[in-house]
Amino acid sequence: MKTPAILATLTLVAPPMMAAPGNPETSGTFHCCITQINQRIGQPEKENQALKNQLQQIQQVLNTKVDRAYELIPGSFTWQKAKADAEKRGGHLATITSEAEWLFIKNSLGDSLPDVNIWIGATDEGNEGHWRWVTGEAWGYTRWDADEPDNYRNQEHYAHISLYTGSKWNDLHNDSFLVTHYLLEK
Ligand SMILES: [Ca+2]
Ligand SMILES: [Ca+2]
Image (cartoon, rainbow, N blue to C red; front, side, top):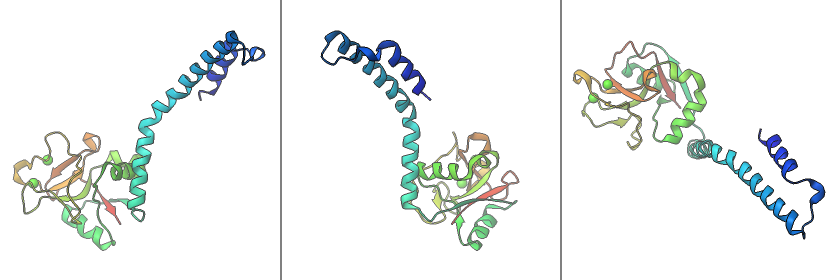
């Protein structure tokens, strides 16, 4: 809360009894005071700008995907089995096609997200290096970790959110014990 600090500034710099608009001495004092207040009010606005931008982006997702819901499903699925299970539940492995959608997912799932490895609906199976979403949505936005996807041992064709890298993405082989959840979107 900045309000007490602002009030303190007002009291110290400009005693209320001197409020004479026509008096050049007092109006100068007030001008100085108002400038200080504006500076102090403006500062938190700047500090909050990043947060406001995030909220705007989340709002964009809400506007375009109002009926979307994301759920973390636990289980030792292969990527293929996770894909089938998501479809059986009437959804699909999550497709994360914008920063806004990612922020929305992060906000939806809260603290549970960074603690586990999670399959998502991206694969280059059958066409090495050509990544695609299971839904056929346009491939563009990515969150690959540095040096990923690396197609290690020429076996890694499935993407997951990695707990080790601040929720960046890594490619893995279909059957990895490291992945303990998948992200359902429906
Ligand atoms: Ca690959
Ligand atoms: Ca990899």
